[in-house]
Image: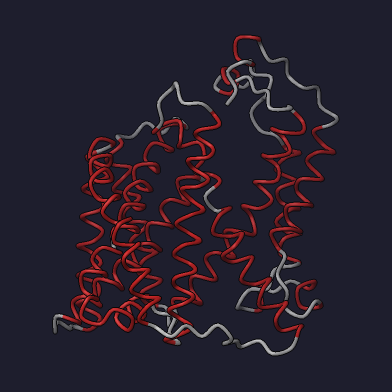
Length: 365
């Protein structure tokens, strides 16, 4: 699951980089239609794969020297954007209270909940990139604030620019807001998706190795790049990136929410934060956790069904009966999580909790 998510996210993020690069080339007077688009996409993917193939130290060096400069530019860009544009604080497309509620729930589900919760499967990756002596509290706050602050910052800035410009295309917003400064700004904005994609490709290969896939890491990374390229091609061919992105976010949210609910209930409620780490990697016939938890899979399946009933996607098949009856509202993350989490608790309460050895119980993070 972690590997598949990273592959798909690389494709999605690369589209953003591609859009920005094409905008830079257009500012320089270079155009070439669909052929140029695919050529630039291929170059971007090769660069990302190259850094990911070199491994952790190449990634760390790249991040070390580019992130601080990007933060400084973001501050300057925010000041210039807000000072040079007329933000429409009253602009709206929803008129009636019902339309406003529908719009809020759909935005909350796709971006507010969907964007954040889709990163939950990445939590296992943090053990690969932090010092063994780092406390659980420091890891939590660093990752939480590292996700929250940039996301809210960029989302708020993008909303302000979009209200003044009326466009939803990232490159169009930047060109309209910064004029002659658009080229350097676009070049620096590319850093975010590229940096994320490098980590995605690296994490994908390590996730595969951690479950016992006996293939060289560089080969797995290449396969991830091919899958990501296929996802990118889908977005390139889409008539609207906004619609395609909404499909993507809703499609992963409808199953990640039930999965996250099961994980949270299992760890915090059933096991009270106590996990025998060694037993997780033991042979199924010797591990108190066993191999496959049928009850958990049933709870997950029913949770996905519960999420679909209150899901309101852009196509009819992704519009559940409860969502249609409630005027197009979308609380799929809530209904799916409640169904899956509740059912799993009922099932897990019947099982005998495994005994956690003292040597591992105290090592929880």
